[in-house]
Image (cartoon, rainbow over all chains, first blue to last red; front, top):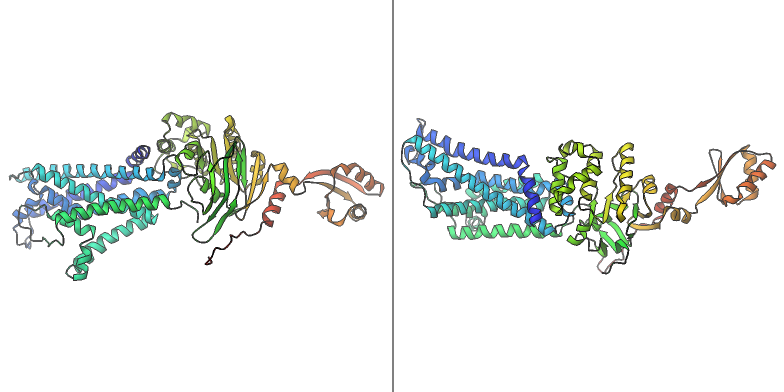
Length: 279
Length: 316
């Protein structure tokens, strides 16, 4: 597995697509989630309407709301980026046929895939660290420009929030990785993953949320459970857009861990047994 | 499953039926001796690549067994002792040739110091820093061979190594293959190009419709199919034909483009020449012709029956 991990690290850091994906994640988060939000709420348009005044709403970009704001933003854009990252890591091997090159070296199939999974775990960890650090820095700059004061979250909240961020990144990456192995096609893996995320969970989940049968199904979906975890980190003001969660944060965490395990195990099973090439 | 001494590859009853129902390889019993260059010859779709994929662990056999480099196909022990290039060489297009070999070396647990020597061996040093996607077909093939050599393998499996190469590239690859056998290395290469196999291989196995239909040295295969003939060019043709028909059976005489091909013992050449001249026939050409490997190949593969497996209960 170590040999596979070392090979994956070389491939990963030299692939520009990975850096571009991370750059998109960071730029959209910082520019849209922080800078643009601060500018708009500092100088709201004349037709701006909200139950909470703009001067209160803009506190969501200050350090006191670091964790809930990052989690809310990355659960949409971040989830999509992670699905793409995971899908590319496996589906590309089939598209380029490099899967047969690496399987005829020395490591067993299990070792090859475990090395890839370990690399993805490291990547998601690093992305979570950099994301949190960059948003913390941006948040500090904005509150300094604003001239107001804001407290940082406690160490416990920071630690838990970082854990939630990493877990959610890992689940969506594992989902994309699994789709890449299952479909053996980059387009199918990414297209299928994003369709599920934006149409299956986000759109249908919101539209049919109050239907009894649909509600029971939604309780088991990864996006809903991630939302429940995120909702446990509350803003420092009353959020007028908050939705009622279908599950609590503890169940949400357990469900996400179960998905992480399931995607990993299923990917291993398929990868070990399936023929490579031929017809 | 024991390995017969002196064999780098041994298969027993190796069979592969794909999920689509296609029966690609049937009851294959193959033996590749240690230190030889073995040519696996067959037309397109005969089952060559399927066989090599099974030997490399990329495909799971439907039935039968195989031992490759002392281990079961795809096992770490077997893979550690073999190098392979199966079908099109596949590498990462965004990496340079050298970086691709670095990736392969890391997977194989081979030190980085092996990379430059194999690049020199395949004459790719000058292009090693360029991205793989800029490589020509010949360079891709050479990089594939380089990757297969990184582990200094005891067994080298090459699937159609001259595929897509121009004549110059084909000659260079053939010379490279001849060098690769040094030090007792075993080479198993597949091809549908008879000339390539004839010039490179010690022994040849001919596969057709998934079955091994013949195996042996090139001379043994020719002899199996009748071997040599006398070629006679003489005028007048009709007079020559009358003389030949008086000496030999109709089945021994074939004529094409004014040249008679006689399936007779070449030792009769001098006597035949005297008889023709005595009967007023001018002989302008009289020589021994060996049946080409192409003739042997066509004869063996066209005669191969379509294989089936015995039905189990329940059909399918």
